[in-house]
Image (cartoon, rainbow, N blue to C red; front, top):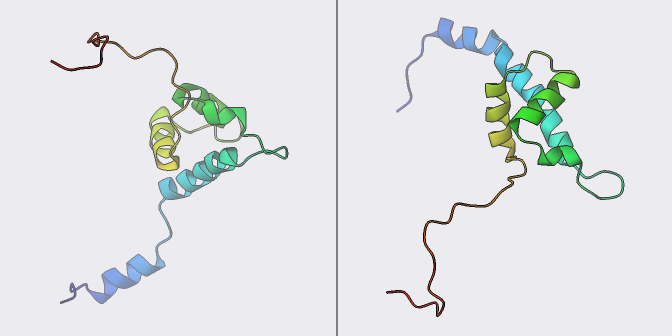
Length: 102
């Protein structure tokens, strides 16, 4: 039940190299994965806590001058990085002292 593809299309697909975006994404993603590795004392690197804005500047300073903020957003999502979230959550309900709900 395979899909029919013309031989010319298949050979073109096999001979074509990877897209430039895939190559640059893979290089930048490797840099993000390298940040997640602990240093020689076993501690995480401080850059792991960076959000998108600081990570964008860090990548541009460390060899990726053309990376965009949208690319950094996407790659940080893929790498499972979301930075340090500061501040408190908004409290919309005041809980009862006894812990029983109405």
